[in-house]
Length: 240
Image (cartoon, rainbow, N blue to C red; front, side, top):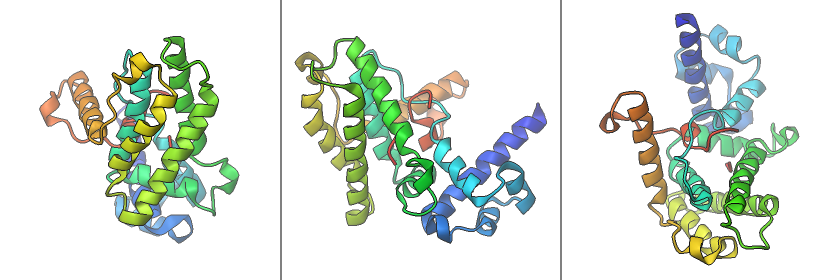
């Protein structure tokens, strides 16, 4: 058991180091040697967990879908918004999310991976919309699969434009504006009026999730470390 826990910690350390390298240099410019240096592990340790640079990049992309998520809401459209806002908050702060976006949207290694993380985010958002529909939160014309595709594409476009223009400094503000423009076409009026979509919503959700996790682990909310991107996505398997 101790050996297994150590292996998991090493794998996570390697992924975090790899994320910083891929985020800085892109797939083609990244090297296993740089990952080894930043992780502080041996080359053999990297190859024990990942057989190639390509497999390592895939691990970075997939890692954002394997941990705890945003707090569950009785209103699924609020959970839908919270997911997008939390990722907007974390994207400039978490190399795993940032690198996942760069790898997924690049024109090199991931062309034959079906879009990297993008299908996972579409599926995530669609599941929330389906649940919202079952609760009567959606307008009659809303088709969850179509809306999830469009919202994910719009979110991705906002992220790219924010990165190009100001290094994502205004990403939370811009994603908040996106939801405020789109949700009137998705939510029934009674739900729309209750949705919290302000620019500070992502930070609130991340702090709430961190406090919940700390309480579950017996550490208390005040000592919780900031969440990473892989810990803020919804439970189960978004847009880089």
